[in-house]
Image (cartoon, each protein chain N blue to C red):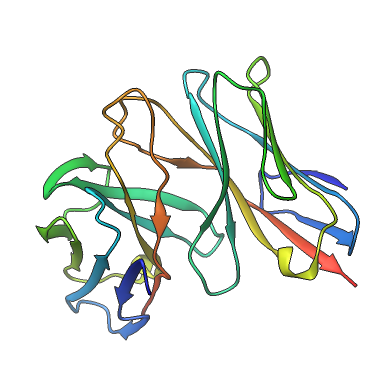
Length: 117
Length: 113
């Protein structure tokens, strides 16, 4: 059974296009995240939603818009794609958002490899 | 072998040897630390974690050591196997910080038979 799944796995598109990446988790977690991994393998958080509410919004161009229709799904829509958006995008989930004394382990999806031409 | 994981260096070890992967974290207020393993073409996979009230934690073939004085974290893998070949990331976070993980640059572990 896949815990955190993402679609599509690969996405090749032209500059200026709009695209979406979808993420679903079947772990019953309350919190979901989007990370970007660049060509040097550096992983950086972009957004986080706790039970459909945005709680982390890093310095990301407003061409990126996350949407959480329910707590099991977190999608990422990217407008006007640029060459620099080429990266691997990972979705993750955790039990809670870390508002309590202790943090919770994050479980990652397999990634979506985005190539902008 | 040992290496400092700041610029995705490669640590090469022989199968059966012990591996030590090091990480310098950035925020002295961080209180939860995690090691992730990322195999080629896959997402990061949780290996082991440690909270700041501990200085050592052991799992199956893995041990994490935390030195808060010098903001240093290490991952020790005993009897390294070819299946351990991957990129290893340390990550830090802070209680009450909405579980925002700050990742280190990663270290590639290459295990040779």
